[in-house]
Picture (cartoon, rainbow, N blue to C red):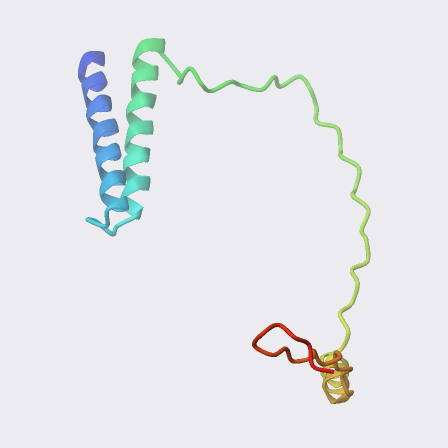
Amino acid sequence: MSVEELDRMLAQHHADLYHYRRDLVFRKVTDTAAVKSRRHDIARIKGVMAEMQGGGAPVAVKEKPAAKAAAPKPAAKKVAAKKAPPVKAVKEKAVKEKAAPKEKAPAKKAASKKGEVKA
């Protein structure tokens, strides 16, 4: 395959991906895994194009220098997690709160139809 053919395939795959995503939104299709496979197909085509144009490894891949040795990272400090109260204690507290008498708000005075307040 030539670069031009791959370029046309890439454009076609991009259009297919767009249309498939649109169809997902409108619930015409339900296979969400196909979106991932279409994205992977696009990545494969781009990788082949990069190899053909660059003459070797893909352009986006950068090699790390081997001369530098990685220094060991210091260990992170562990913090003790707080323990949750036992379930039984939480339930007992909730029962006590329900059983406790609640303070009632003072009742409002009823008004007559003409806006007069009854004493």
